[in-house]
Length: 177
Image (tube, rainbow, N blue to C red; front, side, top):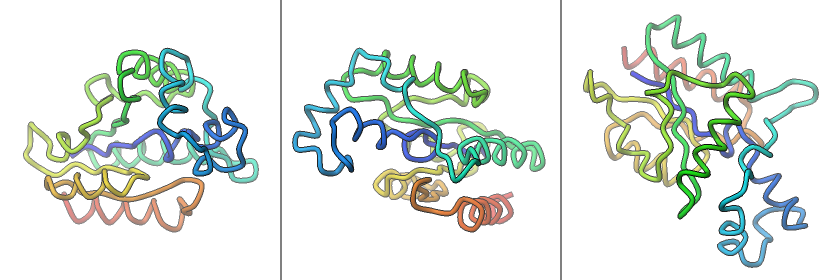
């Protein structure tokens, strides 16, 4: 079993920076979202993202450290499963790796996955057991579950990581050993 964390919306504050770059209060009010997303290509955008904070607590670090500890305690792996920008795979993946390295959030290299097809990783290829994905995008969770994986929808700027995410991860690990 591998616990995969998505980056954008889970440990990297993609949407806050996206709104700032487009001079709007909330990213959903950007008039031409596709054009604005394409403009991020070939830039170091992903290295400009903040982690999530709640008061003075780095929530992203808390989440990653919790998953690292849970993986050690339960003799399982952890990883990152994140989507690059459409049409900008290599550049986006590079800057996401840099961001992870700068924060000491890097899993083992084989568990650092940058793909638009996350559900391909829902089942562990070596053991046949379901993997866990923590992602903010409901369509990713639905596809993951449809492929036999365990999906936990979590959005760091809306959901409480201590009251929701950590217990959900504990249940998923305990029920799938």
